[in-house]
Amino acid sequence: MAGVDDPREHLRATFDAAAELYQAARPEYPLELYDALIEAAALGAGDRLLEVGCASGKATLPLARRGVRITCVEMGTALAAAARRALGTFSDVQVVECAFEAWEPALVEAFDLVFAATAWHWIDPSIRYERAWQLLRPGGHLAFWSATHVFPEKGDPFFVEIQEVYEEIGEGLPAGAIWTRPGELADSRDEIEGSELFENVLVREFDWKVVYDADSYLRLLDTFSNHIAMQPRQRERLYSEIRRRLAQRSDGRLGRHWGAVLHVARRTDRQAVS
Image (cartoon, rainbow, N blue to C red; front, top):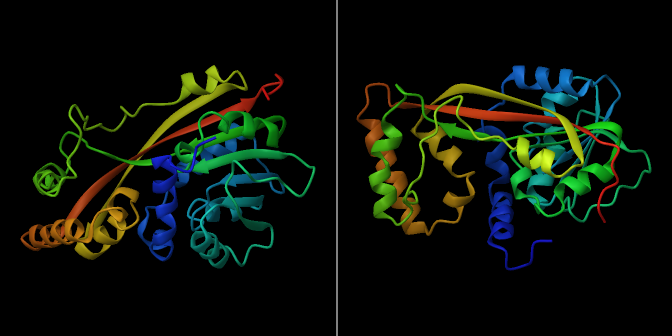
């Protein structure tokens, strides 16, 4: 399990500082993604779902509206509270404040689906598949996806142009960084199959565009772990330059393209390695 000095743990915890912003600032996932998930996992009303790292409930709401029962496990105190507020009208949704790696369910009944939206990569890679396998019923499914920035060939040049400011403040891209285009996102099929705990892996990519003004874009940046972790002087310089450059545009807006790779896999009958 990840140790207390693991930088991944520190960055994971920073999301709690953005709890109030997360629900409003983060993009909605495409409805087509949920349709594909429900079809691949053969979900129906009343099925039991476990969400790993629900944050403020961004991905929980669309599924809760489909009539499934959801237990959400969220390690952040403020994020768990935000999720309870957002999901308070759904009696079949429960939010538990705990790390997924340490959580023990109160009920013996296994889950039909374990899923994570932009959270799976934060879970300790040495145990995450085994842990999901243990919590699923025979024939149950694991699903995860992440929303990430993609760069179409004729996309907004703002993001290339602003890199000089990131470089100036010491937060530039690493050498060899790739500007990934829609349809070119890496997937985790090999990792899933390599666990030998899941099979029949479905991989499907979705992309969409969101238009932001300066205020809404800076609110979005305030939910990203690397921006939260910046020194105040770095963030002030970057944000002031973003405002200045957008103010020079006739509409004051930028267009950011998002991509998400949905993975859905069925639990095998193999025994999880203890």
